[in-house]
Image: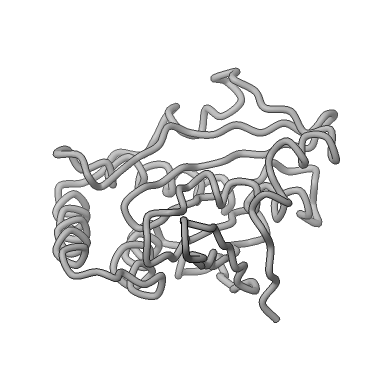
Length: 208
């Protein structure tokens, strides 16, 4: 069953107070985003360039649904990073509906959730309008991560809306702490999918 959640009711401040969750800006905490990342072959770069090209072509003809984002952007990334192969297994969670009032109308969106190995959450925001930024999905990602049945290991998330990507890390050893990566986007001239893909491959090595 779809769970209806007002974004204002589950914010980062609520999670920080409820679970004694604390942000950290210590670079060493989330070194998986920049340290010893796997190299990308020329063939992989060509593939990622094509993914970006396909996305930019599609955004010229809105609306771009969450299913299309998964098909055109997320699925190729997961396949190239090896997440469809053993030992990984992907399952889906119930979608979360979000809403926002914009003058005379209520705008509804959806956050679709995929989980890999109970250690990597993928959240995709769907909206026919630009009312929802990645910040709308970050509290939801942290909520799932805090409910991880194996709190001894750190867990990760990737939040995306098609064009933009942010990674999260949560560690519950001692006091729960979390950190965000830089935001990557497909709207720059350089292809930042390279970095997104390298981080995904790094996380795959950790989860394997």
